[in-house]
Image (cartoon, one colour):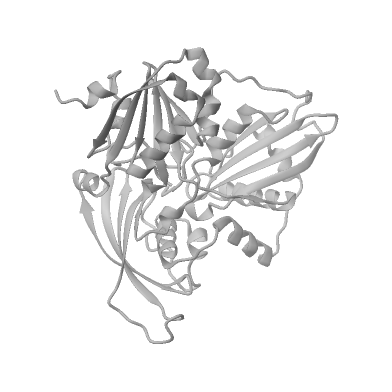
Length: 428
């Protein structure tokens, strides 16, 4: 993706952590619920296709311009019981990608599943009707069929949704697009979203922030490209007309990555009334991995604790990490990573956009009794430390060190054979 909210891939070249469509490290799939939970039937014994279901509620996230959507639906079953569905849609590459279904009363397992799906998206949940819910899923099912993409394999869990055809008028579709794209308030958002969608081959998304005659296929030869960084500067060109209606021209320098190859792309983008009205490719230049690392470099602030809790107690307290501290958990061979995201996608509304700026920080709980907290600004590391200090986990922590690192090293440590973070960063 240019998937901004789920492409939190663990690439060593990406200094810092993140991406913007974030449902877990190194996968477009939402992170799995932790082990140790059991499936609750809640009185529902018949299979999903055979049961009589009644729509109760649904929502969709307003993250369409980030290249992803998450949907949730709640169904009640005649005779007792509930069905909870979570869908993940990748608007660039895989379309309707996954469906996770839980049966029974709402519980912590479902809360953690929802957090894994939605927690990294910087999203608002938009309530929708059954008709709109069905229409969105039909739209993306058709996308998969048209592009020869597989649908989620657990067809019995969701096929019944398509038994009733949903329709929306053109004005209703436009209204829905406005809702799922979120409010656009600045030229910076327009430019960043537009380029992000163009590099992602998402013409439907790009068209939402562009005038009708603007070319959307200039980057049609780019596939599975990551929009790593973008710098926006006003040009010297001045347009006639009243200031409040006058177009504004910007020169953009975008760092993109495709299959490990980096390039800097220069474009000219003209915005008027929060729409792209003109767009031109200027030139490009190759970027080495070393140069890319410098361009993406971030200072990493790390705080290290000894963590005194038995393994079985850790399992029982996962909700404290995931839900109360608003993180998304992924498993690694030597520990658990809890990634804390910023609550909105405000990082798109910046002159210097960086893919990883939606991440507030991370907690890494190693299998060897260390808790490492990392963030990329002094303000964020203090906030993460304060979250620990205000939680019941504080009773199991002893502070052993605080560090300011010019280059991020946490993921190198996670992928290393070291068991002690402080030994890993100490000079030989």
